[in-house]
Amino acid sequence: MRYGDVLDVLDGGSAREWALRVLGEISAGGSGVRGVRHPLGFLCLPLVREGDLGACVHLWTAAARRARSTTSQVHCHSWDLVSHVLYGQVRNVHAVVTDTTGSPTHRVFEVVSTPSGDVIRPTPRTVAYAPGRAELFGAGDTYTLAAGAFHSSVIPEDGEAATVALGRGRPGLNDLSLGPIATPLHHVRRERLDDAETARAAELARRSLWTSNTPGG
Image 1 (cartoon, helix red, strand yellow):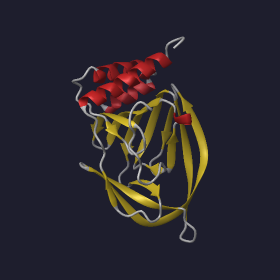
Image 2 (tube, rainbow, N blue to C red; image 1 turned 180 degrees about the vertical axis):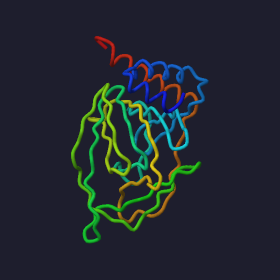
Image 3 (tube, rainbow, N blue to C red; image 1 turned 45 degrees about the vertical axis):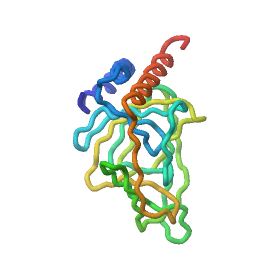
């Protein structure tokens, strides 16, 4: 599977059928995919990694333990995002971020990913944050977000949702997060799921996708 193949699936309108097949393969075991508990509250099933290109399935569910963020849910990517909602709803809340040293609400943190986890590094930049425009996307919707745009992804009423997320890295940009001003430099280990947990997560997503798109389901 390649990045271009996943993009073609989304462009061709066959994301549901493709996702049912891929999730079924992962749930059956032997795919080599290992899930990760992401600090932003979802389970990530990584499918493609080609240099600066990547594709994953993101799964929000109350049926699995979630990792907790040490900063906040407000962040920006070093990569352009294409996100397709498989089921459920996702609210993309744009952030209004104003640089200030007078009355800041947050500090900007650089998130540096390493093989052992993420290094969360405070920067000198302090800002005033306020939530901005919110967009609500449902099953079958695809949306994009440019690298460097601060936002948060909210699942309404803590519901169940899954997306296919594709990223294209932009040289010279960093992954950033907003957090409490006094938070020090620290390291966050990203917990990998074992094979059984990965298979259960994939099967949960497959069943949820199937029932959400089946008449009467």
